[in-house]
Amino acid sequence: MSVRIMTDSAADLPQPWPEGVTVLPMTVSFGERQYQDGVNMTHRQFYELLIEGDALPTTSQIGPGQFEEAFRGAVTAGEQVVCVTMSSKLSGTYQSACIAAEEFPGQVFVVDSLNVTIGEGLLVRWAMELVGQGLEAAQIARQLERERGRIRLIALLDTLEYLKRGGRLSASVALVGGLLSIKPVVSVEDGEVKVIGKARGSKNGSNLLTEACQKDGGVDFSRPHCLGYTGLSDELLRKYIEDSRPLWEGHLDALTVNTVGGTIGTHVGPGAIAVAFFHKG
Image (tube, rainbow, N blue to C red; front, side):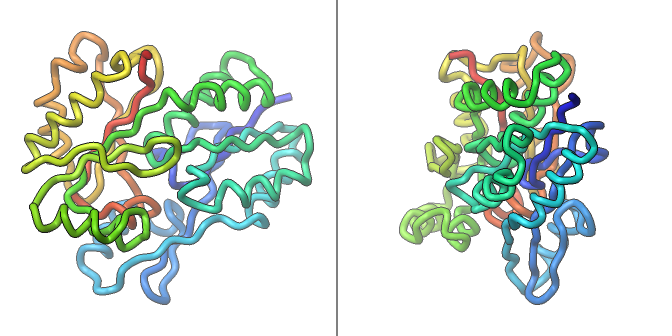
C-alpha cells in the first residue's frame, strides 16, 4: 500500500509540491478578507499586504472536517497517510488532525512536529525520504516521533513585536527588546518559541545564529537542511550565507532556501532569517 504524506501550509514547502505530498492550507485574514495560504495568496502577496496595509493579519487553524475530507480521499484511493502538523503548543491544528484520524484507525497516523515553518518542513522532507526507503506509514510515524527532537530551528528576527501581538511572547520581553534596539535570536524548543540570544545589529545576530548551529554536535549534513527568510527581499539571508560560509563549505554543493509564508510570517513579521537542520548530538 502506498503512503501519502500530508502537512499544513505552516511547513512552508515550496511549490510545486512533490508527488505523494498533500499540503492543506491555513487561513490568513486581513480584516474581513480571507486567504488560503499558498492557494490564493503567495508568500510575496502576503508580505505586500502586511507591509502596505493597515490591517494586522490573523491566522486560523485547519478544522477537523478539512482533515477528514483529505484523509478520506487518500484512504479511498488505497493510500495510508502520515500527517505532519505544526507544533501542538502553537496551534490547535494537531488536535484537529487527531480528531479526524479517529475515523481511520490503522490507516492515518498523525505526527506532532513540535516545530514550525522550515523546521516542520524538514520533518516532512525526512518523511518523504522514508517513503522512498519503502517504510510503511506506521513505521514512518514512529521514526518521525523518535527523531523530531534532533531538528533545530533558529531564527534572527527584526523585532519581537509580531510575536507579542500573536501572544507567543510576553509584552514585557518584547518591550525590552524594542527599547534596546536589539535583534532577538529565537529557537523552537520542545514545540515552543524561546528567546536564546540578543544582538545589536544583524552582523552580531548572524554570529549568534552560527554559534547556535555549532552546538549539540553541529549540523548533520546527511539529513535535510533549509534556510528561510520573511519579507520581500533575501538580502539579509544572502549576507548571512556569505558570513557563515565556513559552516557549510565543503559539506554541501548548494543550500536549500525557502520563503516563509503567511501562517508564520503573521507572527514574526518581515526581515527575519532562519536556519533549520538535524543536529549530530
